[in-house]
Image (tube, rainbow, N blue to C red; front, top):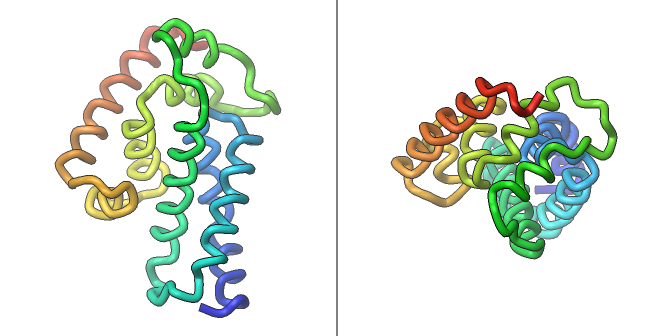
Length: 162
């Protein structure tokens, strides 16, 4: 892939990719921007070996997801559920999200559940495509989707996050 082709693909996917990362980061747009920048750098450095331009979206989302997972692993681990809820109840850095309650609920899901839900419902990827992006089985994706929906339903119905 040439530099010009890479730029064209990035421009075509940038909005959806950033939205995915912002949601994956629980509404923290600064963290999402940092992860996006790192993911784009990783993609650019390996774009010479990328041959299937029709799968650029899945490729960049996979790089973004693995970059997010690496970032999460480098951060401290929550000691309990209440600490995670307290963190999620804080206002996002830019305070401008229309769906803050949804972001807060998404932040309480496990990384795997959140990623599966976001890729399936927000980005429209199939279960098979999500399995390839996240590098897990299709059955695992289905399980993450079911659990994620169930957890979101419970979190959003209690109205505790509003």
